[in-house]
Length: 507
Image (cartoon, rainbow, N blue to C red; front, side, top):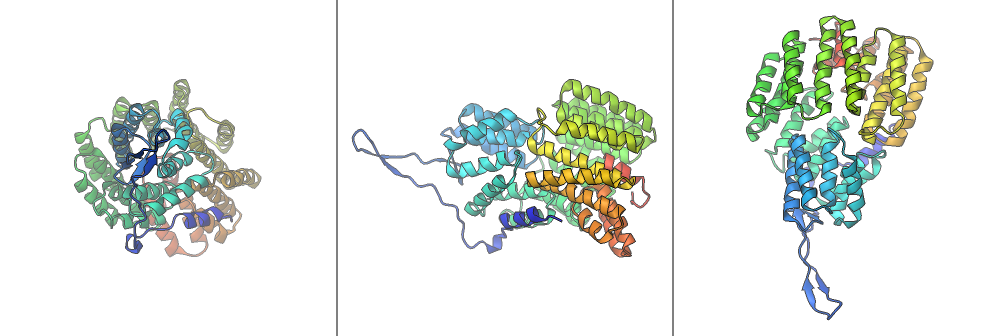
């Protein structure tokens, strides 16, 4: 098994415990003297503007700098639409501000990718200050095909600003999104030593404590209670509590906190969608449909609108009306194609394949989707496309292994291996290792299957098979721990639906 990237990541991202930092490496900008070419007159170069009072940036516009700070603050607090708008304002105040465009592409990547902003940030990079260049390379690099240059830039930035909570947060959040939960969690806990009431970290820890290999629901809820207290005017703390309470099985509490978020902001899409998801899992299907319709009404882009419609279509499967569900998904796929929304098209296509009536139909749909993702997809970042392709290939390996077609699984795994080597991305490497795990389990190589299936902690299907492998190895206590981990992934997703058809999951 190739764990080279994981080892390199461990070296690139040391855990920066605040107690171990003996001196900050932040160097305040110096006022430098320059000699006029005309008459040799000494002049004082203006001090550069500082992002959050620390990182020198190239813009001379106080307004542009302020909008950049506000954009990053909104991003950290998961107000992504607001972050995008504020980053756009930063670029309007200074059209040559590299970090403004980097922030615009960075915040947009989790919604509707902005390729023009990404290209503009790269073009302006040589004109940015040295530390601004590191931040821009990080923000643009993680959206590219190869992550290693981006990681190197962030490592340099960490060395320069080891106590800057914004730099530390960006790093820990990225590790979390890469499913490197242990290192992300340790870094976030060390960050709280710098600022014990930093809302973004309290939020991320709330999810981290429940999604790690050893879930701790009490710590998760406690962290989110601190988050609610630290930022009572924002809907996101209540929304996060709604998510986590659903994971732990407190559906009524989940509904109450989503409703509290909507009291603060009646158009908060995530909470409106969350109401539908929780009601679906409660079996209140008609009520769930109404909430999904309301979510579609408050959506601000086609991606969110189509996702709400996708969740509504899945209700048919929960009801036991699979054919109606497949028909609804087919109609929705046509709508997504008409709206030309690539990320929604992928979500719908993969969901439709996984919920197909039989193996042959699923494999046919998966291969058609794989072919589409082989080349550049307009409106989809390179990193998103790689992750999507990896998930398709992993699903091919899963179903082929379970239906006794090892050669098909091996073909998919071979493609995944090449993709993982090219991308240096855990969101590609994890599906690669998981795919190997499915095949090894089908072949009876239980010990190696356990090792590989452990890579993907957020896939209910992979975690379920990991528990099965432990049972077959004669480790019932370990299998029980894994099933305990699995129950905290309870969500209205395709994977949870498929896994929940197995009675081993505690609902």
